[in-house]
Length: 459
Image (cartoon, rainbow, N blue to C red; front, side, top):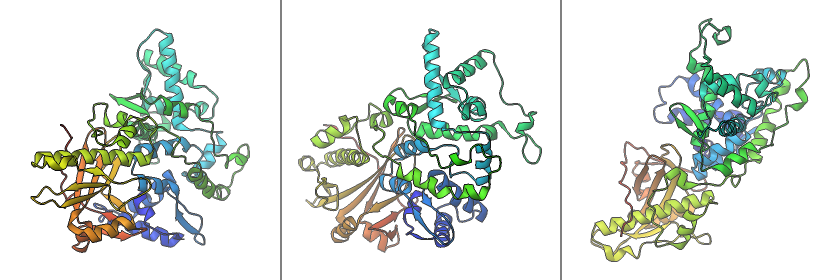
């Protein structure tokens, strides 16, 4: 969704929505989807994540920094941290009628911050009791003890009180879900399932797990122990979008008034986004035993060892892994004399249009010029699109069959590598799609390209 937003130039609301809708329809598997479903995706997902700002039919709609950040960096873990940090109730991601109810109930609620504080408070209580267990929470407990309790969401009771309540309820074996409760009934009068009731809290918990803030075991979420700095950032957060504050305490709130605040909400979400807010512990995602080739490049060795990684350095990590892959590929194929010549050539001051200078290993001394495109996520995610700059596309056009794009997708569970040789030639033969946008936006299908086994350098 972020990729598609970034392909659409600033345009009228009507034109932007039309292009976005068609892009979603053409996504693999969506062609037979009902228009209503696709329109829901078009409106709800970008609104939730603040991908673009939309005012009225007479004003332009434009893609915002949240979408651009995810599109350019392809780092879902960092993106979700930034999203969760600003996400609150009330917010412009909600319909005006829902906002009205939230304001009338005095709710001021940041879900991720509250969950972190409750788990921290629970840990403190358990340790006071002499327990060595870590506090955890289920989606059901989060729903009934946090999300559905206006005393919590309006700030009337503390995180310590919530944690104590959850622990006491467990001791008393309290059951939360009751299909006979009138609050559980749907509009048709039938009881909603437990999954429906807990879906909203469950989504936030899942987002927090992907953001590497929580870890999940048997349906219960606890704090990720090696992410203390990020967790403290959430726990100590005092930021707040105050655009809805003038409506608190008013007996009659017009939904039209609330709609006018929406553009200011999206402006706030995107203007306050700070990619350097959180440190990135890549080893906590890839695993501490991940073998990475850092032998031949001191710059990469520093990046891997550093606790203060930027999104640019994630690209450097991908280059290091592919550098190791190439060395091992040459060694396996009997070209050990070329191993020491493989090098990362990209630098902050100079980008020749590719990242790694390697060799073909086909009986010649021909070079293999490799551009590495890396996506990193705690959980498996398949993102087959990537961006090539104008310079990269020009160099690929010149080098042709000796130019390669290595599409590397890293997650906690696996590392997936796709190799696209001569991307310009692939585009001309209709084997990949390419669309101009400050270079070229590339899309390929996993049905047409099979993953290549990722090799690890070993002497």
